[in-house]
Image (cartoon, rainbow, N blue to C red; front, side):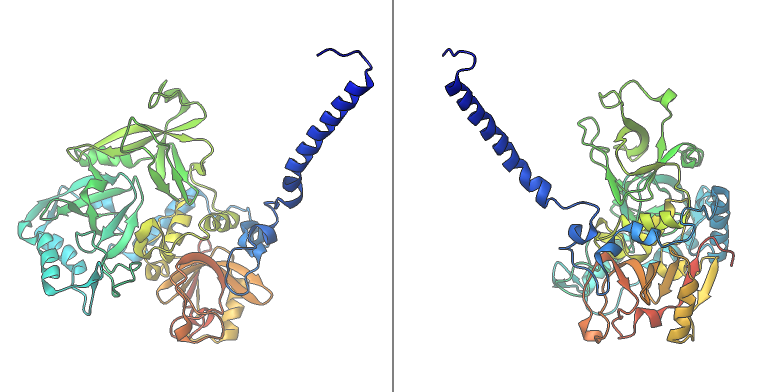
Length: 483
């Protein structure tokens, strides 16, 4: 086809074609420019998210609460002060709550070991279920035999290890989910807590079938799957591995290593908030890791478990876009609030089951990002040595007066539950917490809902006994202010 310059017919056709293309592009882009919700607009972003009563969409953003804090970014304690706090906590709570792992020698007396194991292994009364079936006495007898008490001697060897990924601590050596209801699988009576990856442990005993270790961590003890712990040749090697001079801390709710065909142990390994990992300095980074040049990646050194159960450290790559910190985060009120909001909406996990967090493990992991070593259970967290407000015998009005002076990020303790205080809005006091459930304001005990998530709510919600959270408060803990 040929045409002459200025041919009106051809020019009309080209003009029509150009306009049709322009209109088509306009139609395609039109929905994006008109209907796309702005990520910063909380009322749009969270409009379809169910929330507790009296919680507005704006309250679902950490910055809403940070913006209400005076001197939010002021550093409360230095790293040296935090380490001094950790020592004071261990001394205050005692060896039955916090464990000085370095104090263990090469052996442990049989009488002491047997007492430790049996203190956690009492058979619970009442009816219990596994896979929907009521348990009989023979089940518990089988678990008792796995304790392997007959193989405890007068002196028993102590081994030193490290967790190779997040794992459970159990009161009996079994993975069976034991519940008080046939169909409710969210509360396992045998689940004690969870340990993060790369946590040092002391191994005192093993089950009769060899599949479980009775282990002690810095804040808990119990039965841990042997496959989740790698052992060192001796205590000296273990002590050296515990020293983290250069390290990363996981500051997201979870981060995941990428898939690799070169390491089954590290491929897609998931790491929870507060996990500490050795960071390789640039001048020490190998030329390749897993057949990749480690450009735009952190290079880590992580423990893995060999076939013989012994530890082997491997390099791993973590993309620089992951939510991590080089070293511990500065301990500021803004950071406490921000860290807790990274878990908002996550599943509630009793004792760390379901690869999730309960109330006290949420506070534990948040504060671990700053270098704190808190006790694991809510009752023990209520006894840490810091400025404490006691609600015992206080009226509702007096309780509100205490909250009016409480700093955001402080820990609020009630029977069997821990929350983090956010602040006061329009006369209501708000917290963020991982909760099994509560009843909305003005309802009775029969209205308690199974929330089972990390949520924001105010303190007018009620416990199963009908008492509000506000009137159930026992203590408030303000870490960083002298007691």
